[in-house]
Amino acid sequence: MNLILLFNDDFIDDHTVRLCERRRAHVTDVHRAVCGDVLTVGLLNGKMGEGTVTEINERVLELEVILDQTAPAPLPLTLILALPRPKMLKRTLQTITAMGVKKLILLNSYRVEKSYWQTPILNSEALTEQLILGLEQAKDTQLPEVILQKRFKPFVEDELPDLLTGSRALVAHPNTSEACPRALTCHTTLAIGPEGGFIPYEIEKLELAGFEAVHLGPRILRVENAVPALLARLF
Image 1 (cartoon, rainbow, N blue to C red):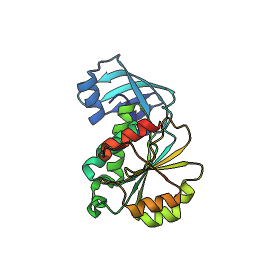
Image 2 (cartoon, one colour):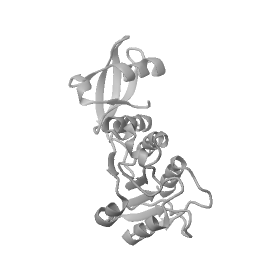
Image 3 (cartoon, one colour):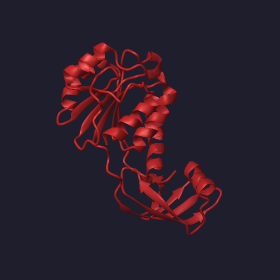
Image 4 (cartoon, one colour):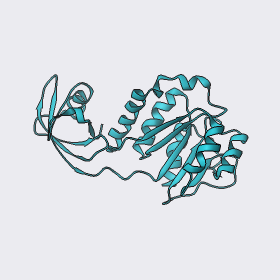
């Protein structure tokens, strides 16, 4: 981890935190920190700063922290992603968090297997675990919002119009002539389909809602590759 993420329960006084288990083990085994070392820290949904190691042993790690820095700016993006298969979902959650996405909508579509919605990764605690790993990687503290939408048509027809207010709407689709734009500065809503893409009916519904279909070229990418490629190109 490139940032030691802190929680309110870690504080034993205004400027001292006590860490155990995974984070303590990471600091000792990976950072190989000793008393006096300074580490990058950040409070979940709060500021970042530095933590000086004041005590470290086999059970606990104590840091004297100063939080005086703001977290990196988020991407001006709402990401709508057809629910990937569970193994890919874990990696994708970490990737989008590391890249600065702060609002993610996981959407059902025709090519999403029903069994995907039963994965324990969608439980609140499991989701948060993956998002935290992304924050630690990228030196960020602001936890993304994740929304589950299990019904495609009602979401697109009833909720999406309000969501798109003031936003440029793009849907990644290989069978279109319009190339994905570059270096956007406006707020953007990006929809990415499952393996094989959205079916024609879904593309039609999204276009009726105001989306522009764009492509990345002739190659068909896995979701875990398409997501960072699209985000890097757009922003």
